Image 1: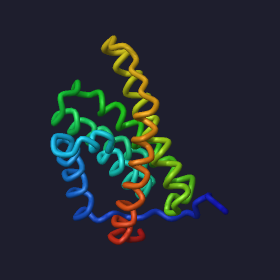
Image 2: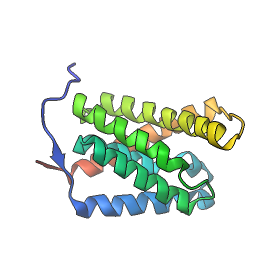
Image 3: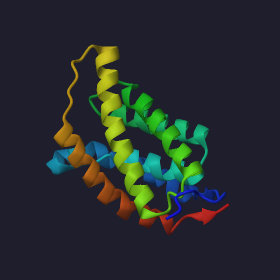
Length: 168
């Protein structure tokens, strides 16, 4: 199986990008109050991964990740900027993976989503400790469950997004 991506960049329709951004942040802020398992969802991260990998532009990925992270911070009780920094790293890594590998295939998507969900949790815990002096809170079982849940959700969501993708 060849995971290396042939040179092809895709364009995303703004009519898909903006509702996805707003919908992911609003659902992330409201769903946990209704459905307790939704605390494990990382909807903004899935949007960052999909659009950064599809666009294959690291600068776009950084800005998308930072913007979504700041929106997420603004609507939550978290410290402003924490998820913005984490989102910037996630966007950069997703765009890099999109440029290097064929992330249109399910095995690559599983690896990318799972890896970035775990990385997001570890990096956020590290930043909380380093910047805010909050003790490390490694929740390995919770993070693993979150990774598997987001992989399943991401595979479904990415197939839906693929219907609206157009080749550049």
